[in-house]
Image (cartoon, rainbow, N blue to C red; front, top):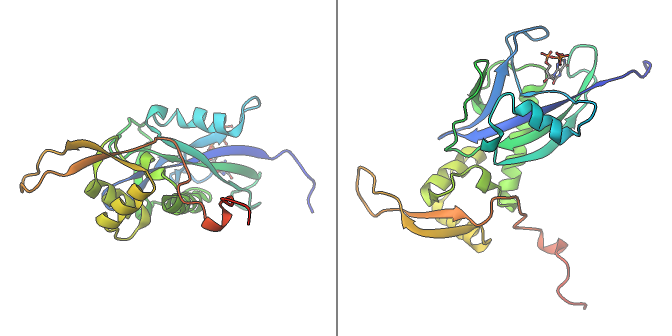
Length: 229
Ligand SMILES: Nc1nc2c([nH]c(=O)n2[C@H]2C[C@H](O)[C@@H](COP(=O)(O)OP(=O)(O)OP(=O)(O)O)O2)c(=O)[nH]1
């Protein structure tokens, strides 16, 4: 094995937002070698006096208003020795979520890209982006993470569109409302949306009961026993 050396540690962020038919990820276009012209996740070097989460927030703030990022969580460490050209670098990646109605200002080198039609990405950033989307998909099934994709107030049909974009398949509005209501995640606001151009009954508006992450569906077998048997 080659001699151990100092290995640079980077932090990266997969920031996702749901567009009408596909998730979008925030990428910036590299202006220098290696991988000039390719699109990269926001990030940079871990500083000497910060932990990885403080670091990713610092780097992310250069690309997007952090106030618009509703949820940030650690995703994984990407440490394949061949994930980039030498010298070797290790990256800790985070998942960040931006609600669909937010349109934060971004620098000229930065843009939202559909995850199902990514441009040529730098290093392993395409793989990291897909890992971020997989994490989101998994968490939609057992947490209230939808709060970070939705506007403050929304109709069930809008929410259905966001879940369908994230999951990549059709979602029944009736089932979605039933499941999220049973989990105590959805709260009716008591108001309705203005009727659309085609008229019809105005849609009831909802909000999420909480805007921080909560596990809503722990596996029944792993729940603490209700009484000794
Ligand atoms: N150069 C390089 N960057 C990588 C690799 N893997 C990886 O995720 N990155 C990420 C980390 C940073 O977000 C970005 C590096 O950007 P850069 O090449 O413009 O800057 P740098 O960090 O080398 O330079 P600097 O901070 O010392 O100015 O790309 C890799 O193998 N090599």
